[in-house]
Image 1: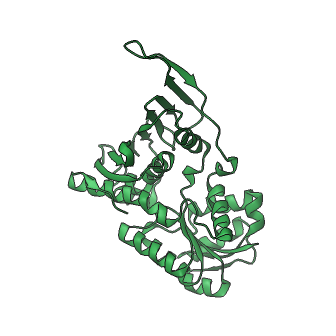
Image 2: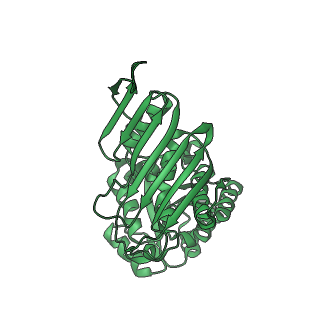
Length: 344
């Protein structure tokens, strides 16, 4: 089956989506972009030309383009403040919707969109593309197989200094709202646990080129007595981590360290004597399914499979709202300087 798709939001992020469609054989054959929508018509027309989307309708009015093209799917790549209206429009026109993150601009809007999707009998999922990489999948497998024993903690460091320009540098809570959800979602996915509470401190360090909230540290309480800690900054230059964060995973039998790129180190305890017990290295297993390690392309492929099978995808709104609740719980905690119970 070839799915007809309208893409709404033709900024820089849209190119990643269209490259995944163009460069992935399975997607190239199963998706046809029939419409491009942006408040700036020139941006939509430029994207149509760059990706040779001949025949695709361009416009500034989403409802009008949806009515004209009658797509199966809406790709939502707009800024968070516009997400509620865009997703609601897509669902009202009978589309399944795949959105950029975050799922919504508030937890209340996320709950509303989850309910709208259920009432419409359509899927609304979120592009958490960073859970679809080999490292995250390998760690999830190791945790599931209890190679390190019972999971006790996940600890992440995220320190980068990107100069985006544009809307990010004017956002409130820019690190927590725009980026941290990738790390939060990865922690939730790898551990298989649910977030229950958080205490967070956020700041905008001296020298920051962001208006608000470029750094944060948070302690999350997960189910089954698992702790997840996050330390991050978007204005830390000189010793960058990976975009995927640097991780330490602890269990009752040992520890796994991942640099967020290619380097893994895992060790388990092998003896019962000594001040420090002896350990031996372990090999980190490969991902269970190589098809789930291609980032954006894997997200879209799994979304199409979910539509065809009638099953909810991994990043369906009913699941992703838990990661969003971590974000807004951390923001509330930082604002009020207190521990916040998380409820999606």
